[in-house]
Length: 449
Ligand code: NDP
Ligand code: 2IT
Image 1: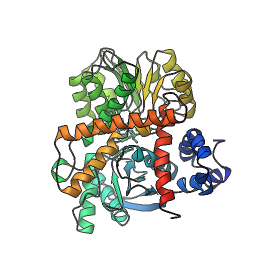
Image 2 (image 1 turned 45 degrees about the vertical axis):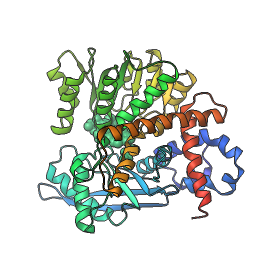
Image 3 (image 1 turned 60 degrees about the vertical axis):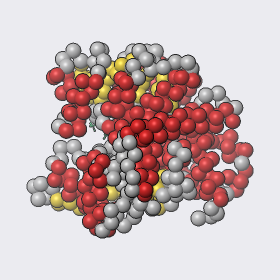
Image 4 (image 1 turned 180 degrees about the vertical axis):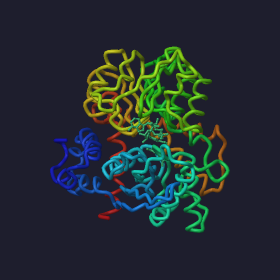
């Protein structure tokens, strides 16, 4: 944190995730600030770390027992220099303003890398959908949208999904927006296919991340073929990461949820993945049930208080964290290094701590930072917005080809930016620098607003 100007820390001393994201960016953009004195005279750091607007609101709703529940809702509109605010909604009990601000901050630079015109924002609530009935989730989403709808719009701010917000929640949220505003617009992405959604959006984050990893390996004349992967999470990103790894000839050994992880030495093949999708998306069950059907696999309960996660202590070639922030710490990183992992690519947002990232970079592990590697989801959201404004729907191949090209272009952009600053193949610095410069130049062009 020592690289963050004191007055930025003093403003929000308790927002540790937000300060972590700011610190990670500042560590790599110092040379850009040194080369461009006007960035400092224009107080770019002070402006870019302060949300253009941050809304918190009460979400009162009634549970199935007729009891009144109250949650806290958020929308942080971080930066609109290059387009309308764009970013997901997270429903999870751990959600705080610090978490939403870190996600919105990351989103600004991620969206900038996609080549599409999208600013950055993020929102959500400390609501836990786990164990809630469909009708409770619907009432919560309707109450949440009753307030959120005042702040969003297809040319203003376009939310989407994130942890705890999938197809079901997007449907309820969109329905309520349409009813209150009396308009059918592309105000949310990740919509159902027959009401304005885009083909490939559900797959996009996982597929895009694997395309990015394939580019990193190809740069070293290597491929995914025959490699073993440790994947965490069992939700949207983990599922489609697994699907694409399998399609490209790799083997996935692990999946997890917040209770524990499964290890399948024989590999999670396409049929087993279908079972996971059924388990998680339809039955909303725990990953431990995987072992009831596939008893050769093992399930390990993970104590969240433990100082490391045993999932990352298996031998493999590649690791793809796809669950949540700070799920790989220094100790986990050391285990990955000792066990022969040569590539770490982030499906989740900020899944690796500072210490972990330093271990990867110092030991020449190929490291794909989330804001570059997982940008495929928001990129296809951008394509959904384009299709909505044209009132057209592109084919699966068209969208997938766009996605692949965008991920290739992000990969090249990261390498070019890191070379321009004399760094060899540093994807973290490249992603931060390229994402940052585009947004900052747009801010300067647009004056003091
Ligand atoms: P889902 O809700 O579909 O899945 C989340 C998965 O992560 C679940 O398996 C969940 O387990 C696990 N998880 C969540 N919180 C924790 C926690 N505190 N500790 C351990 N495990 C946890 O979300 P997504 O797959 O959409 O999101 C996963 C990650 O990818 C997030 O970091 C998100 O920000 C990022 N991301 C998502 C994009 C998207 O398009 N959806 C785009 C880019 C990034 P459990 O079921 O027990 O909660
Ligand atoms: O973190 C992310 O990029 C997302 N959750 C997806 C955002 C989006 O607008 O599709």
